[in-house]
Image 1 (cartoon, rainbow, N blue to C red):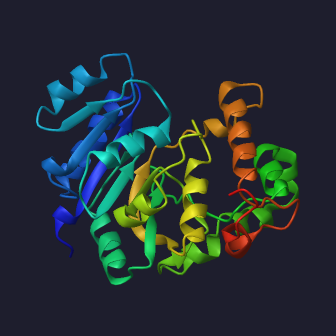
Image 2: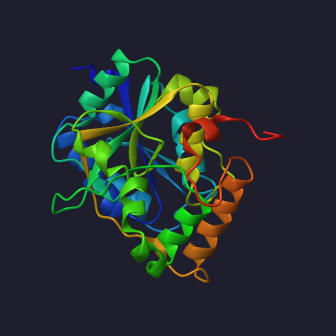
Length: 278
């Protein structure tokens, strides 16, 4: 297996100290990384998060952002404070049951063209969340957000979730993967200048993967690289909620930079083509 020093973990916290502590303790317990290779980025929580970290994890490095610029900004800040070749980016509501990240780093060591690998996200009961996806068409967005449309075309959801690829049990080319848990190659991340901070919430992971494909790299999903995720699908909230409005704004921002066809999913080839002005 790969040397642990090649990998550092970054967790962006916003008012979820107990979840962040659980996540870090699971990494240490299963030797995913050592204590010196963990960094907490507190996204200006304004609560007692930092005090809880210092009490429960006194030897874990924590940095505090001067404002909450969103998930992407938190990740960029963390990457700037780390040095490893590979970076494990995690949401606080995740935890490990074994060291599943070592095989991911090994895969990336053997394939220099692989820039990012998504973890195999599972629910606490072990069922798969299908965290690799195809790029959106307008119809896919509607099917995701409007229940009766999605119910009419269940096969569309299966294709969007790349279920067949997951069932092979082998690493596969993923169009994009959820930002909940992934390993990214530092050199590729820096080449495309990190995450786009114009996305405050949602779609920053889709954009990151699209830009990596555009830069000539590959994004992969990896069955068996399990990471437990206590999932709460706030992006499915109604369009008038904060989550709903933010998700729609992010979708329009993505569409301004990349192809989003009306019905047929664009695939990697069309996404990788530059639009005028990009």
